[in-house]
Length: 394
Image (tube, rainbow, N blue to C red; front, top):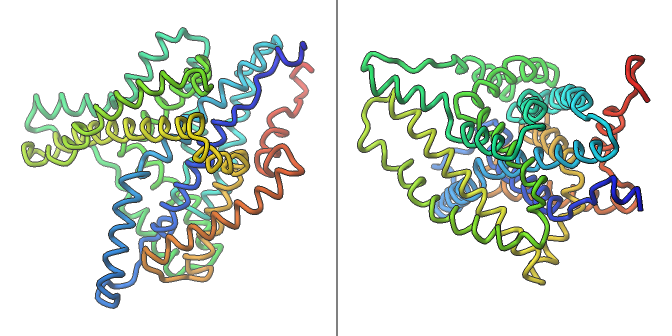
């Protein structure tokens, strides 16, 4: 009985959401050719194939662009709460261990970044220290801080500056040359040339893109919200009515925010004012739609028997989310980059490749979880987290 008190049970709904998010990420990355935007000339394709290419691209990015990653970030904060609270119930302080765990995540991110420039684990490792800073604060303080981060404080400052001074110019990061360097090796470089560029120019370009597109503050906010979800137990079935209210509010907010993102350019001409305004509205719109997806998945999992069976099938895939996320970047690089097979496919064919990657990974996950409680990378990360150092107490 003591052991049951001192450890949170695994939440299957969280694994369903992880599996859903990683599946969506794989589909998006596949049609992007894993940040290698090289596609056949539309003039060489049939009209119907050009139509399906555009339909798939627009549909996937509307449904999952900026939202699948957000679910992944939300669950990162949730996982932190579970780990932190498990140790708290045993009388231990997890904060120092989590800092070490973030360093390990940074190294895992480097492995992923060697193959794929659009990976997020390095950003998570750098941003994750916010959880260490706020984990002892009250819920009210965390809600306030998460809200401040979600509304993009840097963008709000830029809006104020641009509105009050016509001479104000937005600061810009010069990442164009870095993206050009990565595209060049993706197009014609060897494996080692690809790794070298990805680990330097690719990393800097990716982090610069995350900063300019509001991902840093949004990620910090999502981490904190995920931690709060863990504190309140909101992924449990008994809290489903609360997700009904979240769904209603998110839907009400999404449409005007999405509309403002699309139409504000018709009314604001100053690019130094327009850019941060659009980023604020689009960030909030994507957050609202992410809540719609999360609410929908939870309702389907807990309330609809047939949908629940389908979603439950994602649990093994979600339990190995890190392994699946890293290996899909390696597979995608090997398929689309010059050092590998260098496939030159349209978007319709590319999504079929993404589905195939998912199917192969899913089969392997089902086999693996029958004999192991963690995926390979998850297991190594966990074991390395609890390495005893000479200065630590056992």
